[in-house]
Length: 171
Image (cartoon, rainbow, N blue to C red; front, side):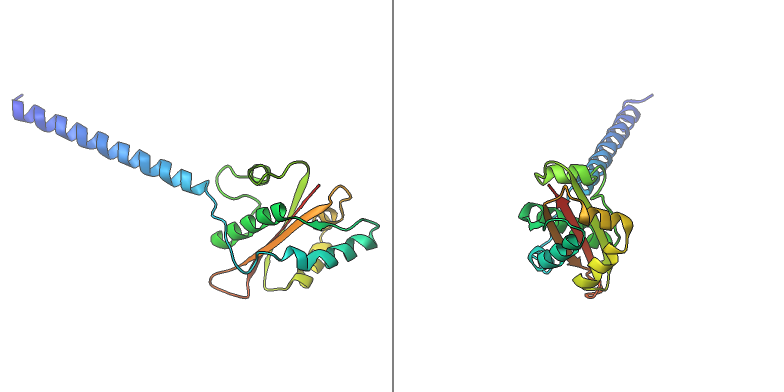
C-alpha cells in the first residue's frame, strides 16, 4: 500500500468520524429541544379570575368550598395550553419525558394536583358544561382536597376560533 493511499484512508475515516459526531450532536440538540417548552403569552393568560364565579357555583351545588385563582397554577395551565396549540393536539404531556407530575414540579407546584384539558371552538361557559358532563373532569373540579386553580387557553394559529384549554387544580 502506498503512502498516499494510507493517507486517503485516514482522511476518509476522519471524515466519517466528523460526520458521526456532527450527526450525534444534531440528535442530542433535537432531543433537548423536545424537552424544552416555551411559555406562550397572549390571549389565554389571566383567564382564571373570569372563571372564579363559575367554579364557585359548580362547587357550591355539590357542597364544596370555592377555589382561589392561583398564578402558579395558571402558569402551568398556560404552559400546557401553549404546548397543545403548538402541537395541534390535546395531551397531558409536554414533550419527551415531561409528564404532568414533572411539569407540576418544574412549576413549583407541590402536593396533590389534577388537570383538565380541552380543545374546541367554544367559550368558557360551554367548556365547563362539557367538563361537568364528563365523570373524570367533574370529579377533578369537585374534589374537596383542591382549594386553588389556574385556567388558561391558547388559540390555534391557523383557526382563531379554536382554543386549547387547560385547568390545573391544586391544594
